Image (cartoon, rainbow, N blue to C red; front, top):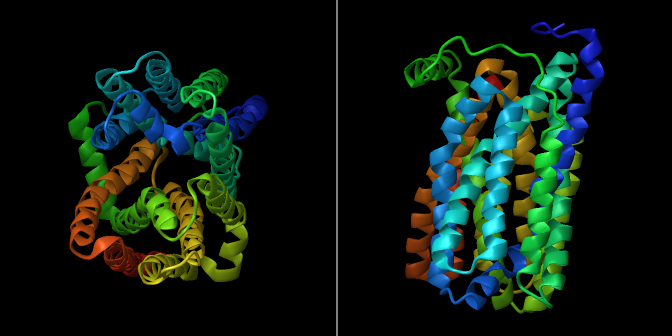
Length: 396
């Protein structure tokens, strides 16, 4: 029994694990992504304004990450998920009904803040649910299946979104809004598992607790560096792969099928991450990922034909392993009272590092073109992630 967990609560807590998988699916139903730039242009926005909107989204997530994690730890992970879903829903309703840059900027801020409340809270409530059921060792496999569900959903919804957009570019946003509404309803059915309560209130005690945790468990700081570097490489490829493949001969109509291939590969490896751990062990698998990421990016810059699509698949395979491995390690080593905060801090580190990587990538691309930029990104991401692994290695 954990922290007052009653045997009669077993069924309700166990149901959380299935409900959270549904939430992962609704969260990843990105119907508008394949056509979102076309939608912006149809509303009279320029490409630079479209990019600026995504910068506003990233800034909102960046600002909200740690405060939202603290909110989840102090007031409840279910409350954080419900609040995040509500903000998200309002943002998408704006997209369904408005058509100006100003309104879209407000929508991106709301969506970013909503996403920050969701980030960390879902993984924290999943781990604490497993902990209450004395099944914490299952978390890595659970998270792997969650990432797989996200990959499959994103791939299928991307195809559907591109298809319905033939009739109206706003239709994908209607579908996305329905999924976020379903997310909100399912989040309301969650049962908050018993957990350690936050003993202090306010930012100063929280920062002291985090500082103490990093002092006593130094490996966590290197875990965040390792995770952030690989996440940067995984995130960047989403945006560069479209131009990369079109330059190498893929038609715009075929990009949806490439999207399906990438996320399908990610889903397969995520689903089998527990098997990969048995084959390679944690230490070898952690060592393998930075090398694969670096080789994939450098080779993408050198390969001038469509065989480069296999290299993009490799990046997605790394992405499929990174999240379940890192969150499993992190959850095993942090107290329940700080779990959502630390998971949000992991995402915060990724956003911070990506700002630096984006500047490096833009500078390298300006000097040496897309191929040169890919090579530089591969070297930087690979070296940073491997350094994080090397410092983390003794604790694996």
